[in-house]
Image (cartoon, rainbow, N blue to C red):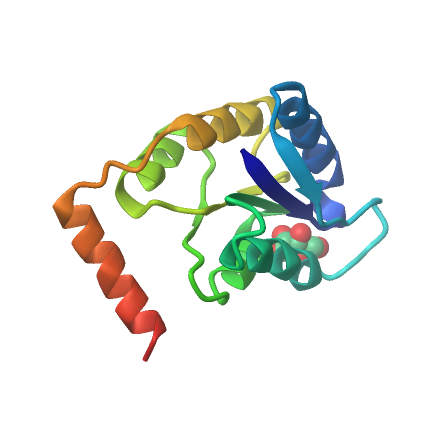
Length: 147
Ligand code: RB5
């Protein structure tokens, strides 16, 4: 799968660990930065990653900051993006099945790196259910986005 990944200084270690894991597993990973622990602004990186998903350059995106909140707010401003902030695997599974989320947000300060790797596995490998009721709700979100 083609996956974009981005972080700020508060999640650089997690981004590197998750990127390495995904590459080892055979995914094609595009790294949108940041590339060090030097202080930076999370919207710059989260936006670039989310935009690549919106423009279909990547199938999915993963955005990480200290809490995951700033990057998720940013990603959800981009048209066509359904970004889910997850800190455990049940939400990761359900957001794929119910929301067909295409960007995953996590927080390095609020979630351990091993747990984040499990969340990523679950989120990457769970298909969208395609149930009529879930599609109807997603279509309503899309309609709101177009207002
Ligand atoms: C950076 O200090 C911090 O604000 C950021 O990583 C994130 O937690 C924002 O939501």
